[in-house]
Amino acid sequence: MKKSGNGRMRRSNRKSITIIFILAGLGAAILLYSYLESRWIKTREIQLVSADVPESFQGWRVVFISDIHHGPSLSRERVSRLVKRINNREPDLILMGGDYVQRDAIYIQPFFDEIKGLKSTHGIYAVLGNHDHWEDAQLTRQLMTRNNIRICDNKSYWVHERKDSIKIGGVGDSWEDIQILDSTTFDLSKEHFSVLIAHNPDYLEYLDSDLIDLTVSGHTHGGQITLFGLWAPILPVVHGQKYRYGLKHFGDRQSYITSGVGTITPPLRLFCRPEIVVFTLSQ
Image 1 (cartoon, rainbow, N blue to C red):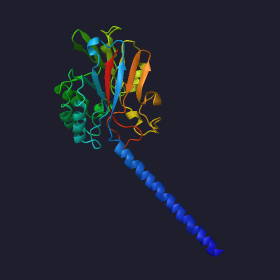
Image 2 (tube, rainbow, N blue to C red; image 1 turned 180 degrees about the horizontal axis):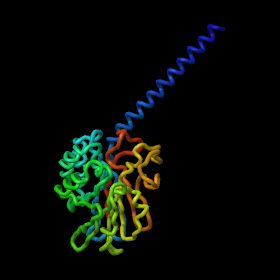
Image 3 (cartoon, rainbow, N blue to C red; image 1 turned 135 degrees about the vertical axis):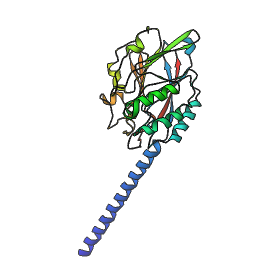
Image 4 (cartoon, rainbow, N blue to C red; image 1 turned 45 degrees about the horizontal axis):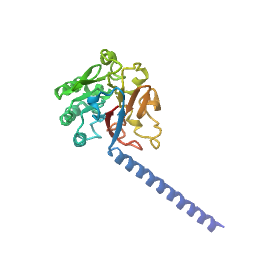
């Protein structure tokens, strides 16, 4: 009986050790995949249909990127590769949604040294995110201006093509700035096509205007770590899963919340790939 008991104990110990090794291997595999996924950038193509898109803008390619987070977890080399990948799409417009660097202001100059290589037929339009305010908003704005990036924080611009025009504007970050929608809508009519860049999608909850056709936001990283892309346990927004990720419709207005390019700590993604968004405008 004693011998039999010892045998059962040894078998039980072996089974426990096997389970521990299996769980450890599974955990290591998930961590490795999450690390690789954080670098596996996809291009999401969206046919953006709106009756307000002017004839001259039919087929325009508008690239939207956000939350690059150049810093300890996303190298200057990767920013350079991102620029080349965007340029290969030959965009008519480029929109940038903020959070360009992370952790330290020393990353701001190198970031713009790379991002100035972006090529767009009709310019680059951008807002600041909360991280840009935390690191150095003044330096970020200086380098945006120096590199011909149009600052859209509570500002707007008309983009002209032949006889037609569209409006590109933005609002300040919801955590670190004020939001003045009238700086975009003051000279808009219902028939105009307009785009608003708002870093934090929580602002969409308070956007009460039928003059904006498309809003683009970042900030959430799509959750970064998700349960099969359906739900995220941690989101930096007040309104939670409602503004986590993707294309949403609010009456005639469409809103897109991107998963972004980079990460915050930990530098991992799970079922939430980083992305470049390419809108093709059409009626």
